Image 1 (cartoon, chains in turn purple, green):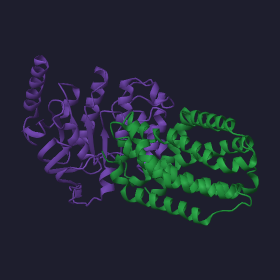
Image 2: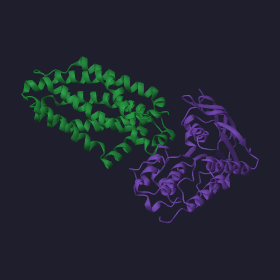
Image 3: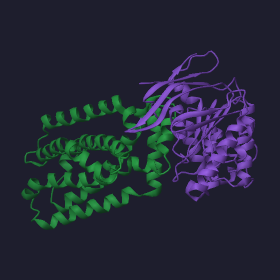
Length: 264
Length: 224
């Protein structure tokens, strides 16, 4: 069984505030070695091997069911690979399993938020679980850049899809992660929200955060992408590499998605 | 974060969401009250009759309460995949189970304490002289209900036929704790009243075994 190892206001969304904790050192480096994931008889991932360097912004592309979400879940330690090894490193320091979790933020398909709690209560709750020193203050700090400070006392169930997505992003950034995992982060965001998300990703990338996201079609979030990896049937078919041009892979993926959409 | 603090944080969240929505407590209290009232019409509630049938009916009502309250424990986490959010946090996975077990225990105990005076009046049973040992038996039996119920709720929540699966898994496992709790309650209602150490030891052992199993396998129970 593979286990993670350590080798070493109605004010609208604003750009992300400079968080003193972000960019403190570089992001995490991730190593996937022969990762396989099987759900019953179905193989979701087939021997994925990939090295993602600290500070890279990687887009995972491919049609539905190609293994993008499974790869993100394995990276977030939410699922165990059936075979293969996953390694994390941050500079030269060794990380325990809890240390790895502390450095990961994730925005998934679902919002990962409690509808029966207010926006602030959600963030305070997760802040406490991440053992942040002053969770209430940190929650307010996190709500401001996503434009939800004035709605902090409102139940999440009263929020629109776009507002929930912004709150989900605030939750993911709460503990100043060094690795951010996004599963189709632009889903549910209007063009203004996508623009804000694109700017947020650019800022986080500039601060040295490692970003891995799954994405569909062309949108603002792809502006910061430094590397694109295409998955097909659970295997990597194209990888622009850390120094290659990601846009050729993104363009190819967009063309294929359009062709598949037309065929349907 | 320590296991204790994470458990308390999750317990506080469970209590806050339940008391805000009042989804479970209200319906469960009404349901078990109806059960107890209906049974009181089926036989003449003299003291001796009640001593014979009362404990069984009482624990049957608690079992109904448990079946209603335990199912949503993990189902509620599925709506927005909040279980994944809990698992992303750097906490001991057992604290997720422990927080939910503690919440389920408190909810069930609250329902039982509301039900107990109604039961005493309708079934003509003097519970005040045996209140302390009765609460001890209720607490031990309820820990067994809440522990096994929470564990199987976690298992069933990830299955396709989850609504059907939980009672199927839970009822056979709960049979020993229900028998022990009923027998211990029978002893307390007997004249003279007697607290059976055998059944009490059985209840404590059941609770310890299931809590230990949940602690050892908690991480695997919560995985997809």
